[in-house]
Image (cartoon, rainbow, N blue to C red):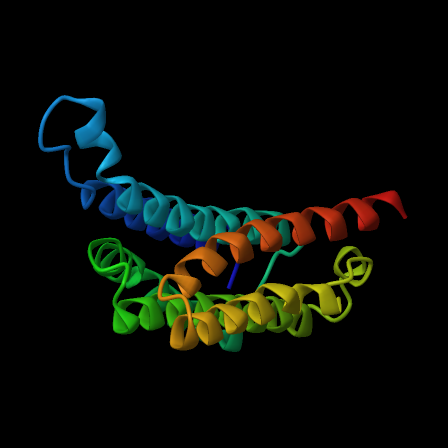
Length: 193
């Protein structure tokens, strides 16, 4: 399949998910700063989810600039990832409304981990379906640094189940920022070669 058509589809899905996500944020109960600040958990959960979705879009945008076709395996992995990321608004709101709930924390962390795993798997599938693409071969997407966000989330799970209930929530924010920074560093290093 040509990547232009697929990229348009994937971009539309992410745009719809972000729209649904922002529409789930309730309005403050009154037009005061205190009422606005009462929703701070909602805003942070939205920020985390938005950054996850934006980072997926950005990474895939940069990847698909280098390839012209993808195979059925790649399409299936992206299909599964589309299903998983479509659940992000649901679990974001559940977490924002129940930040001290271990179940809500766990599901939010699981969605993040599965999304990160599927994105890594999809990227590898794109590489595998384009073995002679010189532009792809110059990029190092096998860096061990790409596993650091997963390690951080696992630390969040340990925190949540032991001493600090919002551990997953906090480490998800740190992980997505780390994911973006690592991607930028790898991209910069590859452009410098």
